[in-house]
Length: 364
Image (cartoon, rainbow, N blue to C red; front, side, top):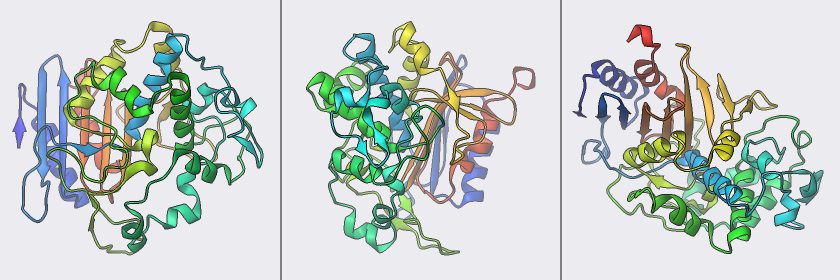
């Protein structure tokens, strides 16, 4: 299915091929540039009913959430309510200490660009086991307090001193959101709505907290639940309490809302020039655990140089049954947002789509 203001047959072909090759249930792509807006889909929202993917479906965006969280922090910095050079200890006294950690040596900036050295709580073996196979069903409605997940992250010593390298860690963004709450005396969800969702009229975007069901029309989210089997069983993981992801990966959104948000963010409408410069100042992602090839990480956003040589900016994310990509030109005038409602194909499912849409100017 396509809705189009311009011909994008090559992109639709790449979309169809991605679903066929990966075995994904379904996939959507929305693009906006100077030719207008295009929406395409392949596959289904629900394998039981055969319902096709549609515009405006809500889905879990995983770590694409981090761009929203960083924006809130940077807005507070612009208002003088906090500084990127503030230490974690300044805002959260006594929380990050011991086992090789010292919150006095870790700054807010280092949280946002993943150079703090703080371990990712999600990679803690005991915590990770709760999300595999049948254990996921036992724990999918668990509520996780942010401070407790931070404690789990701190139980593993840091692999390097703050500022020395890059290590992608959701724990960083839990700490950043806790700092937002201290600086504003409001919940992070309230600040997200007040500062971003309401002003931009992102009607399909929200932080669900402990809500297990997605509020509006949505695709089923299909997952292997991290099975290591050669032919894993596919499970419906649509309903779950995502407090385990919160400000690092818990937001629900739509392709259209992601278009509006990243257009405003990349275009400079959400942050003053100084904070915009901070957000897009990047570090290498070749730390002790290498990250996405061709990327550099800023504050809640990354740049990615594609095989074509074109560099795009934005963020991506994954959670049970959902992978999301939202990237575009540095000025936000050419954007692609996409989601696949199956989690076994990884980021590679987007390769052909990105290659079809973002080509050197001379090859268009």
